[in-house]
Image (cartoon, rainbow, N blue to C red; front, side):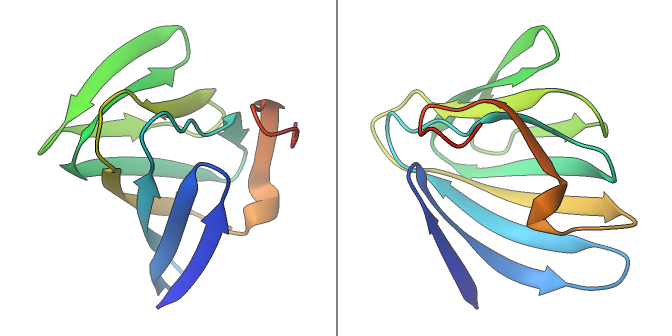
Length: 113
């Protein structure tokens, strides 16, 4: 499985197919992904363990084990691990392109925006 380390944790690509991409994403305690959007894909998140707060548009949504969330394309979103253990979720992407260069970062704690 392909693993990509990031300042907030890491992700592993579980499946990369023409019609979808599946990632297992691990966010360490206190870690936060960039505020971002995608032009060419929608995402569905399913929480495996841990707790976090996701922002989608103007809404903050508490997430915990077994929870899920849909993120429509072009929606600004991010997730922050608010718990004391790793926050792990599975992300399913659908659309016509799944490359990392479809990430438009609007704000980032790690200087990548």
